[in-house]
Image 1 (tube, each protein chain N blue to C red):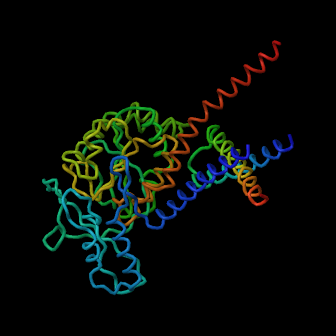
Image 2 (cartoon, rainbow over the protein chains, first blue to last red):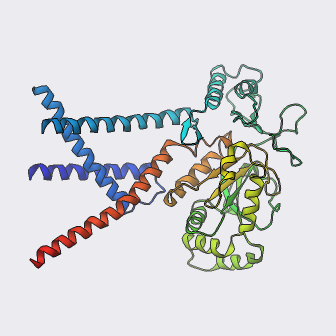
Image 3 (cartoon, rainbow over the protein chains, first blue to last red):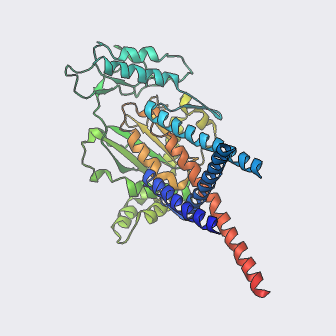
Length: 63
Length: 356
């Protein structure tokens, strides 16, 4: 449960960063629910990837 | 379990590497400003453009020591018929000014209006007289009610070509009216203006003027109303006919297709609505595959493109940044139904639980 909450929090932060980057890169494009969902999805995937890579790296070091 | 994690991590690393490569490609494209040439599904680097850019860079490095800078362009541009020439044939850089710090002067050789062959016009001492063209500073929209009725003296002439009345056409015109000022509201000299002509039905001129006077109009409503009532599709089709009869190799694929989607923007150095065929160089922007919500960005890219020395190279149109936008907006369109579906599933599941 703790892992899930931390993951969600980080995913939210990363999603917001993606959203800000999108709005800065494409100022003339209106951000709608689709783009928000895409950012959320990418934020979640990024965090999951980070966790997986972290586990993989630390696992390989420990072994 | 550990094997699964390793596999996931490796897969994600590969994805990350792809993203990094894409970012590197973006940087490279931005640095070189040479878009690749679309040949079917493949996109091959424009070697001639790269050679031209290299030659340009060399000239800058040498402080404009060469007596004829166009020589380098000519060398980089083999004049093979059928092949895409690297240097635009109607545009060339003038001999450098005595002051190396002075900005480059662009010389435009206006196309021969009596041109009848599909081959591009030749440059040289026997060619048409050259006229200096200052750099384009602004784009302003205007209306054209009849072919050949453009106002003379503008730096560039652009035409908004909509093949038919559609939602895409309305959205595009909304963006035009929202982002681009009327030509009367621009402050640059006419010779530094790109006049963007939107065909207007001659019999509806008064109605359009009356509509503009109405209070509470916005760009979206204006775009929708314009495509429905005021846009002259006959002029648009005539313009397409001029470009495609016979087509330049750069637009041959487009002209061979149905040409029913659009919108298109056509830009030329002189009034082009009466010229047939239209000899290159010209800028023809095909927005058929562009997402509706990216029209604003594409218009901004178009305005940036016409400010370039070589307007026909599409370096500001075919950028990685705009391609990524296409992918992102398409993905966003796919995600939206998934979001609704998930919400429906959750609602159904929670409703089922409640019944229990």
